Image (cartoon, rainbow, N blue to C red):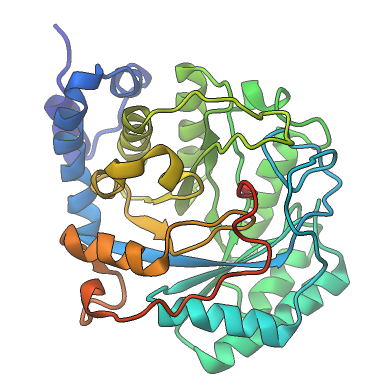
Length: 353
């Protein structure tokens, strides 16, 4: 007898854990049953997050100029994607961009820099920026995403006021070597562990659409759960010209919903964030996706332009969601679009950091 979506959900709500076969059943849902799947799995989302959505904002501190050869990334070594390439933003510009996102409703600022990993001088630079942001906005969460960490660097970030560290595993261990050769899967897992060891909240996710199998998607999601990732960004590959993954089109809006539903049943109480590619791949189903995920990025990404921040806020309000941490001000009552365009956004794909 085939297990139904409601039966899977009932067991999860009772404290059970989805089996590999059950997650595969979710990923292989017939298209005509996807809305039944969403209706069932949305109960898990509401049980843990109600109708709130956490809003995050990216500050692209350093763009391009990366020595890594990640095949999905517009900033990678060998990429000919038409993006702006620049070294570090100054502290004042980083602060201005962060405050623009906060005015738009974000409660977490994600500070991202391209490259293999930070030097000690880079850690000092980021620490100075974080101090300035927290002086002006003491309640804001700050997440850093700077690449592979050396010993002691996570502790220095924590001491500077950083709350979380993002380092995505990107794909299953069994698929990793097909997308990059300049670092290993274990390198990425080790950096997440270093962040956790320093008391930073672990933010680690994946990129869907890299040629992975259903089994490898389950492998990656299970690994993220087991490594204790507090938030799981789900990126959808944007296959822009100039990268090895150019013109790789594997995703449909319904497929993206199935992937988000799988993430939710694997990690019921974890913040699942819809990240890069949501506008391109979910399209008119973005609001439906938020009945599975509980977090989004506001406005632009790293090297690509998202939909306008006001459109994002209207999407939340129109769908009955409230912004986590700003429940007293429904998104639809915000006026204008305070989020400024970042230097380099709108030219190519997001870095899927």
